[in-house]
Image 1 (cartoon, rainbow, N blue to C red):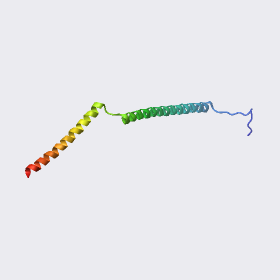
Image 2: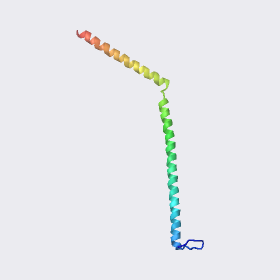
Image 3: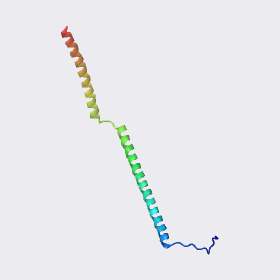
Amino acid sequence: MKISESSEFTMPLKNLLVLIAGTAVSVWAYFGIVERISFIEHQQDLMVIEIEENDTWIDEWTPPASVQENIKKVIDLENQLTRMEVELEYLKASISK
């Protein structure tokens, strides 16, 4: 079989339309999938940025001065209570003798 400019190729119109429709659906599906993947990647990038900001905020956060002062007072009270308990035990032991 020789192929030249005058060679003819025949195909039923129905088959041609099916090929065109199939190609169109395939292209539409491809670009739909690519668009969805791009959207998901963009959302992921935004979430990563937000997570990093939150992590930085958590790492750099310090309680206000009033809270820090109250914490020191509570620690001092705990120490005083411990000392008083020890003294009380000593006094009980002294009285029992």
